[in-house]
Image (cartoon, one colour):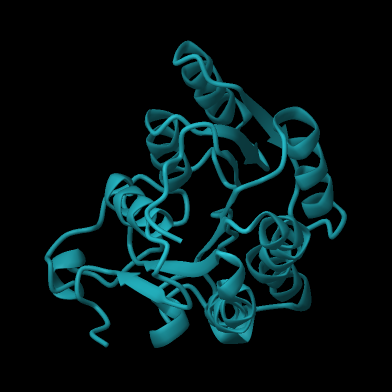
Length: 247
């Protein structure tokens, strides 16, 4: 499968209006990718990436969609293909997070969290994988979390959704590897500059993170791009958590 050259590749990036999504979007632009930047809210940030891509001479589009709606993933795929062509790379980065104690998680909160964080990534992958396997090349990457391994601090709904993503990686990766498609996940924790940064314990990050600081969106983007480049790396969930969960 070799190392990827992203020049001209079509990428569907969800959650492009967040801190990690913006950092990753700029990496993709720098690599020459043609991208659909999707968002649920905060259109201006995704549209800013489109402007930057076009200034670099690249095709790009910003697409709106609430991923809690089960019909939206297929629509985003269809609109990306219609505008840019067949999708080579899927980065399911969008996430939903409301910090709650287990006793306070109601059915609506549970369902929305699982819908955005687990069902939508699956539906996106289900839509793009047949084309990737037919063409003999593709990359799928999910954005997991250290909470999938430790339970985290956001809540049981969030931890369960991210643990489900890890299982999805392992199921899908083994079934498409021979067709030149990799499926992996990155599992960050406590990344500054994101809307999903949870409230931590008193005393600050140095008390809970061995590295003594929060991570940066650019560091998540660095690891994500390294994973996407590598054609021999598949069926893996790579932690990026400052040493919180050694494994």
